[in-house]
Amino acid sequence: MLSMDWIFGQVAFIYAFNKIKPASVVDKIVEAIVDTIVPGRGLGESNWFWRHVRSLERDGDRMSKEIDIRQELRNWDREFPYFHHELIVRYIAGCLASGAAVFVWAQLRSLFASTNNKRR
Image 1 (cartoon, rainbow, N blue to C red):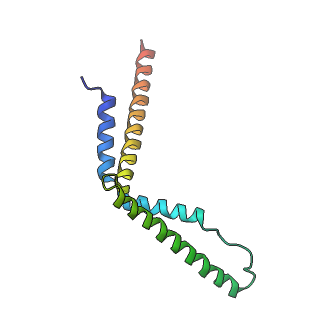
Image 2 (cartoon, helix red, strand yellow):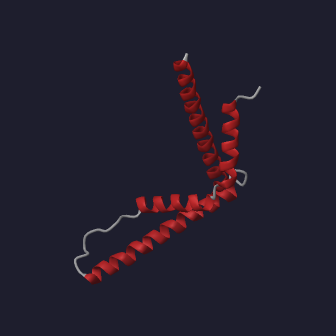
Image 3 (cartoon, helix red, strand yellow):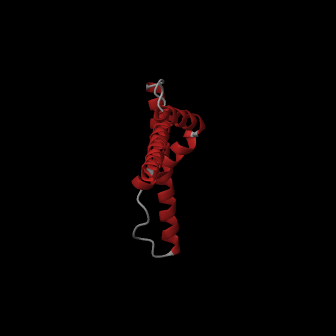
């Protein structure tokens, strides 16, 4: 017999796997990586000219790093066609949703089990 834990986990996994938009998740991850790798504002921005020059340099660095990261993703997809990066994002989202659904179901079940025990 199938347990409700297993059913809720499977339904949550399938729903998240089909509903997630991997491109937007990958964009956010790439943005976070670029924010971490490329340094922010630094010294030498005492007047408006140098602020704008540094801003152009920083934006150029950000764009080149983002292009490098996306190129690596394309290389990964070519090298491992059966393990595409968007498929990895879908699997991770499905596993997180499944774990969350099983956790919530277990908490609800224990909550109702404890209220039924108090009534006796």
